[in-house]
Image (cartoon, rainbow, N blue to C red):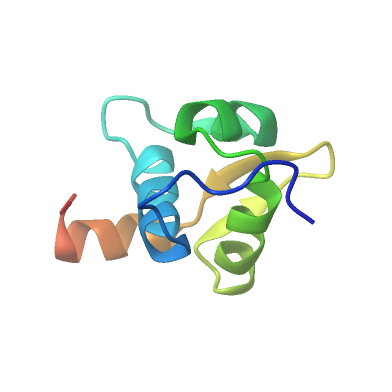
Length: 85
């Protein structure tokens, strides 16, 4: 359950894409983020709800202590499509 609603005008597809781009930033390689940091960066109250489907899709991995990082598949996807807004 979400602690806070998604900000107006933002949907899960946009947040999914922003999360993948955040974790595949070429200037911060390899970026490893906590869920709390992802929530603050993307201004969402429930980052686990955004990360969960990306983990299931094979684009992100979670460590046992709650950190998240991009998989090689995520880096390849961003390489193919670029950081498109």
